[in-house]
Amino acid sequence: MKKIAVMIMAAFVMSATVPVFAAEMTKEEKDQCLLASKGCTTEVDSIQKKIKKLNGEIKKGKKVYSAEEIKKLQQKLDEAEKLLDKIIEGGS
Image (cartoon, rainbow, N blue to C red; front, side, top):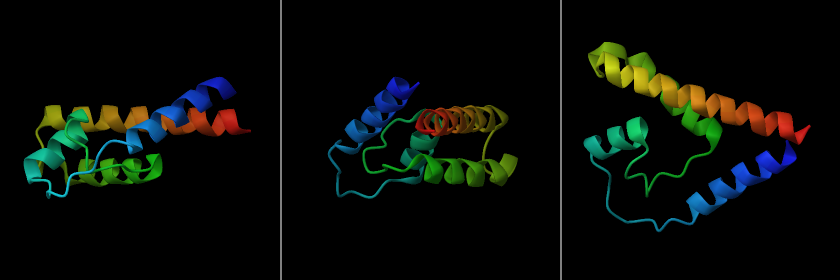
């Protein structure tokens, strides 16, 4: 279990080494980053921060997102919560 936690943490550390670009993200790029984890070069968040962002976006509901996009956001939230659970379980 600790081996999995170490591998997950290593993946996060490696993702933080991605070069950061000075350009601001457009709304479309932010949506793609949240929905598909594409183009997130300027966004490196902790798991807790990502969970908070995803919850906030899901709460916006159908006024902002289609049903399919909300489903994708919920899947990303579920993945992040499972990952956090695995890290917590491995640390104790």
